[in-house]
Image (cartoon, rainbow, N blue to C red; front, side, top):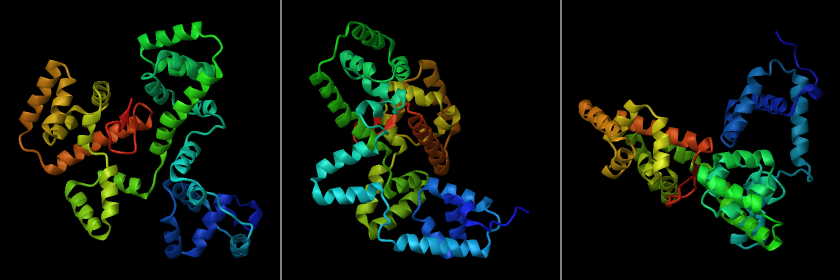
Length: 339
């Protein structure tokens, strides 16, 4: 048995929190867990499982320290939400949104510092739609090793154009640099910050995406009766199988390389004609013919199996986004998936 912890000074912050939650009991601790994000729950759960025995004296000291901390007028807690509420009291909403988007974006004091923390594939997918001269300016301002990874992720022909511009580039005028920086901040970084933001409705949209069709309909209908606004917001945030129709050809091909062909055939049984045509048009003639034959040979397929296959493919699309190969935007516009 591990020794009893009898000195509060030997406990780390997470260990103190874990001990407090265990001492508070299941009911109160359960309410606290509801208000934590997934990473915080995992961290605390691990600490609770490894904590071992803690003496009554240490537990009493933890409660006293906690009570003193929350009763001290100088004790404050800084969060994104608290900061945004404060700014909304003194600034216009559009200005608050710009400031918060930049704060939530990748870490760094300057725009170029922030770009250094952006995945090279995500940055390259944005830059490939810009003028080569603009991309040359950007690559000249970030670290050489990061610039090399971004350059390697650009299409070959476009990359050569960028290299040519960089070789010919002289000192960049401040006005040009300011304009490039403004564009990156307003178009790229703000969108990147919005996509990384996560609230309760986004979390529920992810959960609803993984429900079977009957359960999804049942819960959405019940939620509409209690809060139509929340129900509509969740539906707007849900990423469904049919949303894959907004992928461009290269995106569809990337996705198909990463999914099980049998699952794809089952998923296609419940797809719209528009989505089927999109997938078939991005296959070779022989592969499309084989997929159609597989679908036909299956005969009737249970709706539950179709839902499961479609959910797996949607999950794969999200995994590809998490790796930086695609960027899932916040709203359901034409630019939901950015390459």
